[in-house]
Length: 455
Image (cartoon, rainbow, N blue to C red):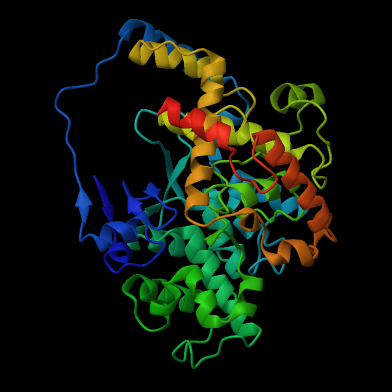
């Protein structure tokens, strides 16, 4: 069953489509779309089973895959602490969005070891053996790394129970947690900067760390009450709050950044969210291996290609990292497989094109060569690019929040780092060239004809 929550019913522009307590089509307001059509839920029940072309071979291949995945060092860690492990890693060097990215590091109270105190047990999606998800003791699922950042550090909250409660509320109300945390932090800084005032908020005072006010605001957003009705309009509020307000909105193409990374220190991440089709979205271009895991140079060269700087603060060659990530993550999305077990997302030992080819054959009998699968990912990106261009998105939209360019990070190893505009422009041009687009990031006419012929 897929349903929109209260937020979707009330046409909140960042409402989700939910398929469970935590699982959701969380980005781009699909819950709002359902609500606009007066659809509460869509339910389906299968009775005929699933036909597998080579069932015996498939069972054997799945057992091989299980053994292969469990051989990765990261799989047992995900199964024991889940994604909160990334909070401590990011926080250590100053890569956590804090107080609407005014700061870049926060409290150790949100570390995975603290999360464990609120975990009832680890659970999984259907049939998955990784078990990377938590059932928390506050009657919900999570928190994920995203929640720790977006309704934790980003709102200036260091009480873990309060963070978990806010993310539980987002899940139950049907709100995208990334957008909710970003918009509330944005509004809070705007009040600090006196760009908005209590008259606009209906008397509500917004202050970082004020759990009770944020909890009330989430409720009001979901029901479009008071200032919540205004904030429910999301990025469109730039017109209401004034052009200066855009300087403090951590979003790309109008979509709030989906993960807690402060990308001023992580340039491949920066290029990735700037060029992502949906906006500031880490699920299409997240180059985790580029910074979080200390891989031997030859391993990185084998994955991404040669000529890539080992320095995470450099943009040299990072277009290759984003290009690789874009393509393989688009391909695994086509298969409906979890991004967590995709080659390059969390580990160099996960599902690559060879595994995909074998699994497709076992399930359907279709024979795809690895090179053919690589081309599918590229086609997806090109078609999405054409869709965006048709709807008015151009090179000017492949950019970053002003703060990432102009405000150096103030804390830890990332202190003093920001994204240089000239270097970013050069990297963007190299990325376009690698994609085969023109200098303005437009898919060329010959490629368009090629795509039309395939369709």
